[in-house]
Length: 113
Length: 115
Image (cartoon, rainbow over all chains, first blue to last red; front, side):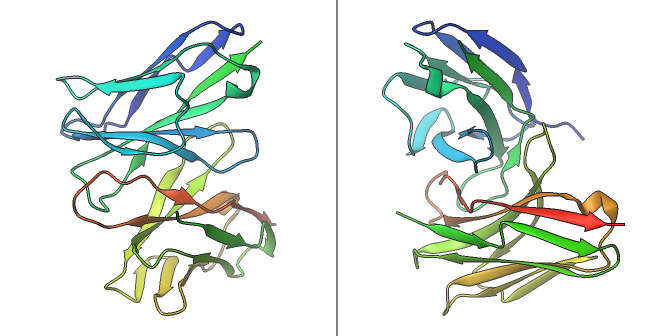
């Protein structure tokens, strides 16, 4: 079965640079979630979108923004990168909202030097 | 906001024995409780979930129980196998029916299956 696709899988950036992470949900899924996972930590919810509209907001820094496009894929834009932004970034998708199962992608490993 | 506590942080069991991981949550509005298995370098994999209108759910060797009054839920794995070794996360979310609510995760349990 098709899964969530994330690109790139690995990304190395320098401090103060920008980065864009992409997420392609499971076909027919209309809801996308972004999570950040530091080394040895649990995933932290950043933001979610349903039908191209922002739905829920977690601990997303003001330097980050995201959107969902007409084909339901989503992009997470990160500016003024800091060393502390180095982490795994996961995208998850679901069909609908309200406690529906969230399926995670393989993640993008971002390293900020 | 929601706070999820998970115990133990590390659990080592003999192959074939059972493993139990426990979680508690703080927000009485939380109604959806999934469990994820994460292997090294991979994304979390949904293995089972339970909603507040159900007290127990089973899928082959895996079962989850929920006590909404006490605000705790548990994962039970029977007849453990080497491939069960991974980090397991519990999570909670309000099942509001109106939005794409994010999950609040526990800190994770590193399950080690000893051959």
